[in-house]
Image 1 (spheres, rainbow, N blue to C red):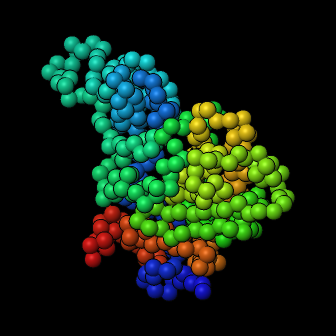
Image 2: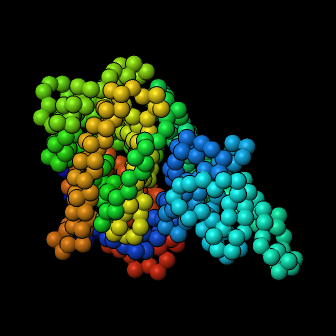
Image 3: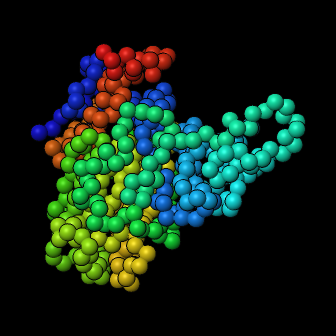
Length: 399
């Protein structure tokens, strides 16, 4: 069974169809997406072991918001807007680092304690009547789940991370994510000339694996399936295919990979992917855990960031297996980036009249339905002429 999205036929799309083309390049919708999705939903920042010492911090920027998490001298983790209370400068200027015992604004030298409280103001006598007690760094809501630190810039209707991930708890706990450390190669960042939703569309289905991903197809192409979203998470599983392998990395990965007896037998020969709406994916492998997330830069530019976590006492064999799984992932990522660009640019073509979905692409259709539930304005086949997209979207939400 297939469905086709009409382009200019009716006023709105049905719940079984893809998003209309205008939603992939509209500046007004992009601004609304930042507000409704990225500022009001949990965003992954780092693992607690990446900020294991007092003063260590990690930053996260999206749209007009910039934040960071930091460990204080009492071993507590805090999250703040990366905004000096004096003139708005960034307080920390690099993506990760250690501020030692105090945070110093690089603009005028205002200083803050690691708990965010204001510590000192140069030439403070020139600020008559200033109330120092109210000038600490502004906090951001944060939550730690299995060692992963999430922040939320603005309150929203989204539940806690623990509640969102509750249905996966039994499956992910044996991996020991909270005890892992980041791989020494650090974070990888790719710039993709595509709308962030196009990147998600490509990643949200495995129908394209046999054609587009030779290595993945060699690894698990005969036994891979995507599950529709439940709540605000998705789940996909690829079970290793037995038999001889053509791809060098796949062949050696399976030969070297030691059996992970910490995992249930059902999870020792799979790559498990769990997506957290709107933009985070965790990959649970027998040798490591990976993550990647899309950070929109403009309607047609997206940064995709990713990294790897592993147990600090991993064996030589598991380290080699992790290297090989990384090779497979890097190859796959390059292939998906190309597809994302093609899918995104197609939406501007005069020949574009929507998309066709198969039953194998339920991961995409369920994701689009989730977007429509948050952004009902995306149900409209044509970009509305309204000057205030937020007002129109809110009215459709409550219609």
